[in-house]
Length: 464
Image (cartoon, rainbow, N blue to C red):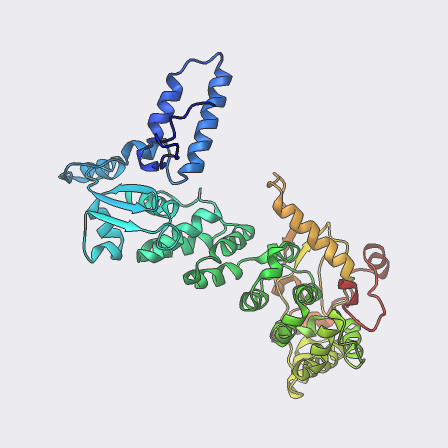
């Protein structure tokens, strides 16, 4: 049945050698064929290019034309010659093999850009795909060496492969360039987290993963609603939760996010609760929640229940219990003092920690977000509302981007929020003339947009 040209005489399949396939030649053959219409021609070319991209994601028609060996190095007399050599890949006498991919490279270019090749130069280098290098990453790195190709068009996976290649070949300039690029506004918070996820398979990229977690910003709640969040290691969780720029409207969202991660594997992760609870800025929690947590810690629980496993760990965490007790005192003192200076000095005299707020964000579509959170904080958030909102954020993050941005806007903590810090006398006097309102929204608005926390003894029971 059919054509057996792909089989040997003994009936076995022939070995498929990608090195013999020339991308541009395949495209030229397709273009020379006759088609009934232009639409059929374009459809066929699209199919062929898709198949070639699946087989050789590191290649394309343009690179295929210049990825050929040269008999000898090319001479260079001026800057124009040097530009022509790089753009045309002239004098490519060095062969780099990565798995089934073959790259013909200019030796001097590799020596100039990579300390790995500067040690000694050979005619052929062979690397294992995925273990030593990746063909996609090396192609991106070689394009940067030849023509200084910008990094803006790279997707998260390509960025990770490029970082991995730069690190493996000891290309410090390229590695630093990648780091600067992903830390600019040209790369979104979502992009940063996707880079983190793709980099998990490379242990040597740990430092870069930490940097990406420090950039999640407004994307944090979308991360909490995704499945990848539940598999994050404890070290990365701590790095992310410690950030001032975490995209939340209330510290309650941070607390509920931690519980969501813990409850995925309660028996295994209950021992890690103290480390995560250290990341919660308890003095930013509503006093009603603090009291509920304190009351719940005094109750006996069933050790066979998966929630009660966490509750037992919470109750036995004496350090957090002390922080909780102090936080209740701090929040109550905040309601007494009209001047922040007096409040801070009073707390310091009693050795009570006063934690600074995060850079809050506000999403108009969220049922419980407050337009301008201020201390003492009075958010009314239920676990079901929180879980529904973060799942919606995660769903939106998976959808293609829309022209209109997400209705989230950041607020500077100094200008618009109730920050706990030393202030000058003139600011303090202006506050005395026009004191800030304790409640950023009216009780009617609060009731209309959110639901009250349940009055059960377990503050997190509804997370299940």
